Amino acid sequence: MSDQIPVALGTRVEIELIGKDKTRERLECVLVDDAAADFDKGFLSVNTPLAQTLLGHAAGETLAYRRGDIVQVKILAVQPHTHAPASDAVEQRDETLRRARDKAELANMVSFALTFDSKWGDYDPEQIVKQYEEQEDQAKGDNK
Image (cartoon, rainbow, N blue to C red; front, side, top):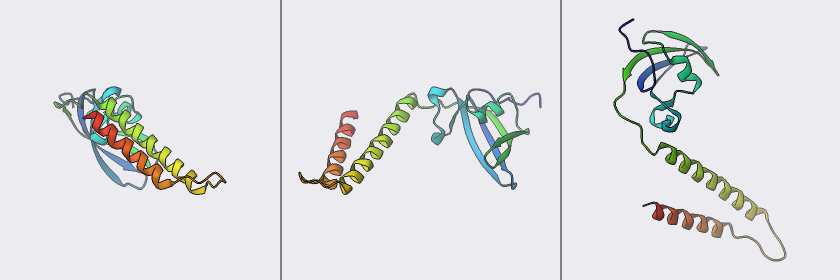
């Protein structure tokens, strides 16, 4: 095993997560620093518990890893990684979070509008949604 590459920052790692009931799930990821992390795209921060468990170990090793139903992780392959993650990963994550917050806020406003009734008039949920969609369209246009 001495000629094998150890798991380190910048390596592509193929692993198998082993569950309590012996279920197995394969996962492939590249270990990166926090700023470049984007799990949906296969970039795992070296500061996550999974990465911390893997660091320094090599292909063929099975390690204890207790999270939820998972009890072990087996390292199937470790390779140097040549493709850099997106340089704007932080901005992309921030934008995704902003959109999620905006949609949650919209859902709250529509929910309120559907339940609010006063002598001065009601809120129009359809108008609230229309205004939100117009703001999103404008934001998309500004980002181009």
